[in-house]
Amino acid sequence: MSALSDNLVLFATLVYLVAMISHAVEYALGNARTRVAAPPVRELVGAGGGAIPAPPAPVVSTVEAERPAHRARLAGLIAVGATALAAGLHLAALVTRGLAADRMPWGNMYEFVLTVTFIGVAAWLVVLWKRPSLRKLGLFLTLVMVLLVATAELVLYVPIVPLVPALNSYWFVIHVSTIVFASGIFLLGAVPAVGYLMRAGYERGKRSFPYTLAKRLPAAVSLERLTFALHAFAFPIFTFAVIAGAIWAEAAWGRPWGWDPKETWAFISWVVYAGYLHARATPTVKRNVATWLAVLGFLTMLMNLFGVNIFFTGLHSYGGLD
Image (cartoon, rainbow, N blue to C red; front, side, top):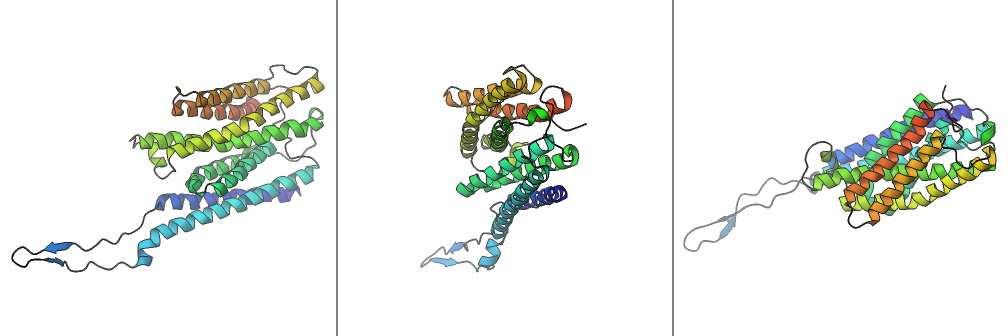
């Protein structure tokens, strides 16, 4: 089962790469199409003059005229199909990892990243099902999937080991499942947040990098609304996860809060995300200012996931890295 899980992660990464390339093809082609120009009309000047058409323009078949747009749509559909297939392989990798370990597959940094990224892509497929017009955002989502899943496989991988005693509790399922779920939604929410900042700049006339990358993204207002909806959904779950962690800490260590590095950064993330939602609900705060707080919040989550596990030592040092 362990070897099967490892192979499934590899296949999922490759299929995510196929999805990303297909999205890039659709993004490059855009909505381009060859248009058939109407023949110009010449006017006769003089008595009895009337309009007569100019010599007919070369005929372009409908099939030829629609070809670029058809290719773009086809590439987009392939991208969505590949993303769904990769998500299925991703889920199978987690299930087989859990069966091999005889526990939930959240016991170390490698497994945590795999689970968070799966939640993110699964949530994306739900969003895409409800709002197909956002499909071109998939280029950036699949790019994130390729980078994070490949990093997990190449850098963070550790063999299956039993849980450390401190994690062997029913609170492991309650606390970690909610923190994983919220983190996956925050991961997805960071994609339209960055997309909004680029698209808003492009709509204001900025044509330098990286604003030109947003040329074919959905309208800025749609991206901003999606950003808010995802964060408003994830924040209460994240809040519950932090509270559950404090209750678990009281049961395991005799104190609910001890300013352990991971606890501290979880608190920082909570404050930043709360600040984002407050700023978003305040009419006097500009949307781009509020959205920058959402991006900052995700950076603090990355620090909590990678930085704390790699650079700090504490009671939450379960990354599994040497």
